[in-house]
Image (cartoon, rainbow, N blue to C red):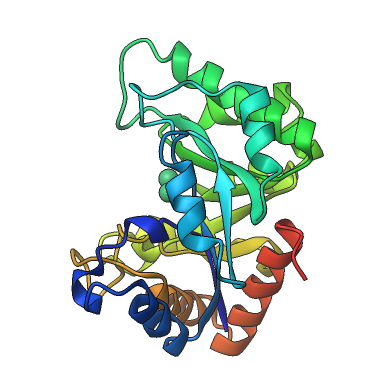
Length: 257
Ligand SMILES: [Zn+2]
Ligand SMILES: [Zn+2]
């Protein structure tokens, strides 16, 4: 059984599933993925996402505003904490810093990140963090604003082992996506081998980043199995032990039974 710790289930194109959300869910379940965290990316789309997943016992969600969305409603600590009281919300994010996709004066991104850290501490939920080409600033803000008090996960992690270790030392988990299956991503495989099993999570980031051999196609959480298989192979662990550990880790981080 797999826990997809980061997907955008509400954004998966249902065209390949007879336009049926239930058919998508049954495909996911047949692949062994029995729990998912559906990630919020802005305030505008939160209600629609929440409505979509709320009826399903095995799907949880987060509330936050993605660092790559510049022209959206800016969240306040109060707004994020209000969303955090809704049923099913188990994390704050995704938030973070992305200096790869965004450039220029990024004070707004850093301020938004700090708002999320403060909200997470205020409501006692872990952070879901997106970080790209912003190693120093990400760690600096996490430390400065005492994010270790709530912890969280650095998702779709592709930075180096040094940053992973610094985040792990702060009490964070590291989540690996389908990028680990990409031919040229040897650096991700090298880094992923070193993550202690008790701090490792797996994800699809669906509908994006479909793992090999489905690269470039629409992704869905059922393919988290391919991420787990590749990780088990490169780490020299059995698929069952990797699946069980990452399942337990996600439950522990997100406060689920
Ligand atoms: Zn992300
Ligand atoms: Zn995401």
